Structures are given as structure tokens and as C-alpha cells.
Image (tube, rainbow, N blue to C red; front, side, top):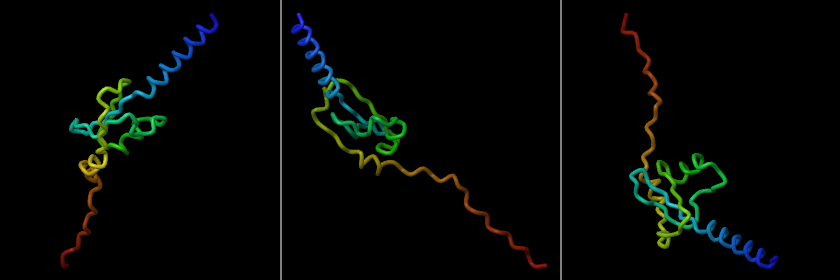
Length: 104
């Protein structure tokens, strides 16, 4: 009985390890085109996504699934996403030009 329980624990542990390594990560650009697809995460998942995703994919969003289906062909176009995003216009108004007094 003890050997049967050990075998069940080992099988459960092996299936959990396999499930953890089988995630598929997709990053979509603002226009909903896929710019990243891989079994490796594009960001450090120990950090909050709202802090790391804008650095990697400005304006994009991350979707991940526990199934690796569709991740056989990897896509790495995050550099093109950076070139597509226009910098936000500056909200700083130009300095006023000092008025000069007209001749007295």
C-alpha cells in the first residue's frame, strides 16, 4: 500500500511539473496583432505585469494559456512594436515670449 501511495504522489508531481512548463505566452500589439508567442514568458513574472509589460510591449497586452497548443512556431517581434509606438505628445506648453513695450 505504501508503494502505491508513493507512485501516486510521483505521478501527481510529474503532471504538475509538466503543466507548469507547458504555458504558452502571447503578446498582442495595440492593433491586436501577435508580436510575441513562446513557451518562455516575455517578462519577469515575479514582478507585477502592469510594471513590466509597458517596458516590453508599450500599449500591448499579455495573454497566457496553460496549453502549449499553437506555440510550436515562436514569434519574436517585440522590437518592431517599439518602433510602431509613437511617443506621447508632450503636455508642456511652450514658454511665453516676453512682451516688449512699444516706444513711448
